[in-house]
Image 1: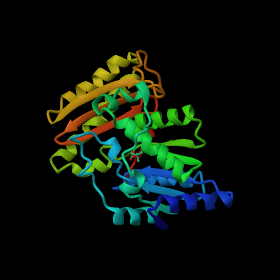
Image 2: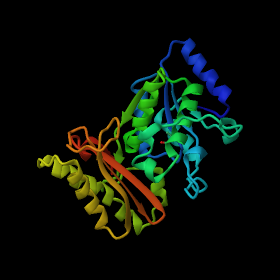
Image 3: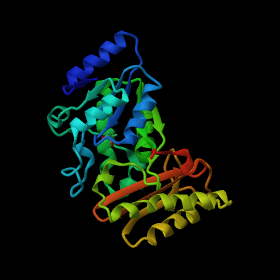
Length: 291
Ligand code: PAF
């Protein structure tokens, strides 16, 4: 595995791969890698030759008072995990190189960026799409892999790619979960021993919605309300939202369908947790960590 920081070095890798006629993949991350990220690498390796994994904690996507300063950073640990997973290029650009000056032109996500996470984190998706466009522009991947845990982000990236005719295939890989259902996230590192069991409540809320759907409930609002009820019954959680939405435009689904996404978000102490599931697939459609 080669580690590069400079944008020009990354461009040179992309150019060399293209000249050799190779199909390349990019797995964009903010580091603090875990098994969920490694599953994205596995998905990338199945679809392309050289796989680049980017590690960049993007300041543009954090709002004032959010966790940018304390977001976990462990490039040595990330490099070990990435090499073990078969990453070819680890690209860890410095902030000054990605943003030599504060960008004056940024990507506007439109209304899809104002709902769910966007309603709680104003400006977040503008920051995400701006950096993703820049990562694509430098690494020039044929394929880019994102996790379904951030399904709104994945939907917005797919929409940006379609609207801007970007020549990159977007793959969305299933969420990876702990044995009790908790979706893997770099932010789980913030959870202490007391909070950790409570965090699995989000997966239980999703399971409740899936159960209702399987029993024949088709009222999207009723399914969302049932999930919200599970969250509200946990005193440690402060609920941000529970919603049943369309997977593409994120609009609320009055009539739930198998591809409708049940999405939940809550705060547990100082940690924000998000999770979602397509109702038809249920949590069985996701991956459980071994052990
Ligand atoms: O999902 C993430 O880790 C980030 O939002 C991404 C896509 C790497 C952009 O900073």
